[in-house]
Length: 494
Image 1 (cartoon, helix red, strand yellow):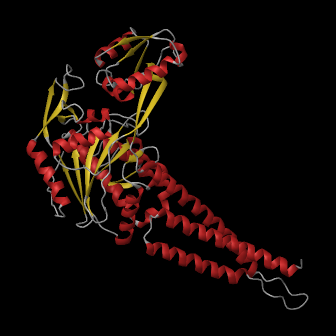
Image 2 (tube, helix red, strand yellow):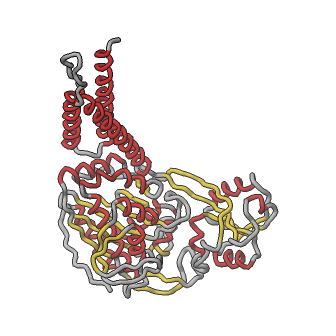
Image 3 (spheres, helix red, strand yellow):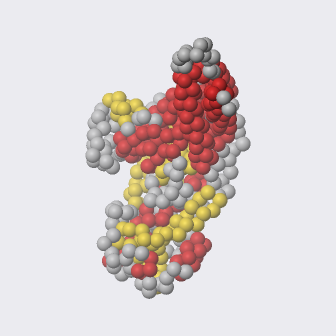
C-alpha cells in the first residue's frame, strides 16, 4: 500500500465517520418528533453543508516537487471533521436518551400501592427479621384486597402477631405509647397519622415495603390537541414513595388549553374542599380522594364541577425544584418579602424575583405568610406554573431539553401519549404562540367540624364550597372548550 493510498484512506475514513454521525443525528431527531419539519430540514441542510466544507478541506493536496512541504489544510480538515463527529455522536446520544425518558413519563396508567413497615426512629428494630413474633398494628379493612396480598408477602418473611384498628387516631396513639412494635399500612394513609403527629415522618423509619402495581382504567381523550381545546388535571403529590404511588392530592389544578384562541385557563381547587368522593359518595376533603388513586381524583372533580377532564399529570413536589433548575431558573413576582415556613434557609424578597428550584418550590408551598393563606398559595402555584410554561415555550429550551427530561423522570407521570406532547411542542416551535393566561380559584367558607369520610370523629378544617363559584368556574372551562375567549378579573390577595 503506497503513501498516497494511505493518505486517501485516512481522509475518507474520517469523512465517512462524519457522514454516519450526521445521518444518525438526523435519524434520532426525526424519530423523536419534537421538531417541526422545517427545523428538521434546516438541520439536515446545515449538516450537509458542513460535510461538503470538510470534504474540500480534508481532501489531500498533491505535492509538487520532491521536497515540497505537506499542506496543513487537509490536516485541519480531518481534525475538524473528527471533533464534529464526536459532537454529533454525543448529540445523537442525548436525543435518543431524551426520547426514552419521554416514553417513560407519558401514556402511563400505572398505579402503585405500597405497604410499609414503619417503626419509631429510635427503636431497636433495623430489619424486617427483627420483628419476628412481635405485635404489628394493621388496618385490614382499609384497602382490604390489597392488604391481604401484602400480608401474605409479609408472612413469607416472618411470623408475627397483629392488632387491628379501624381508627388511625387509635393506631397512632398506641404506636407512640409502645403498645405495638410497628405499624404496617398502605403508605398513602400515613398522611392521616400526620393529623395527630405532625412530625411523624421525621420520627419514624421504614424498614420494609411491598409494592402492588396495577393498570388503571382511566382512558385518554382522542383529540387533536393542536386544534381542539383540552383540560389537564395537575395533581401535586408529596409522598415518600414514587410518583405512581397512591397518596393525597395536595395540589389540584385544572389547566384548560385552547390552541385556537391561544388561551390557557388555570383553575385551582382548594385541597380542603368538602365534596363527595367518587369512590364512596361520602363527603370529605378533596385531597383525600387521592388516597384511592388519580382516577378517583379525576372522577371526583368531574362529578362536582360537571366538566370533562381529558388528561391528568401527577407531579411530585421534588420535581418542581428539578424542573426549575433544569430551565435555569424562572422569573416570578412576589408581593411581599418573607422567610418561607418550608425552608428557613432562604428569603424571598418582594418584587420581580429570579428563582432557583428551592426558592420556587418554597414560594409555591407558602401559605403562612399571607392573610389569604390557601388562596394565595394557589395563586403562587399558578404563577410558578405560568413561568415554567413560558420558559418551556421558548425555542431556547431545545439546548437543555435533555436536562429537563432527566429532571422529570421518576417525578412526573401523565396518561397523555408522547405523540400528543410532541404535537404540542411542534406547534409551539412552529407558531411561537404568546399564550394569554387566565387564572381563577374556587372559593368557599372555612369550617372546623367532624363528619369527613376518612376521619369522621375528628374535628378537621374543611372548606365548604361556594356553589356559585363552582358554576362560574365550570362555565369558564365550557366556554374555553367552545372556542370562546374569556376574560377573568382576578381579586387581589394579601
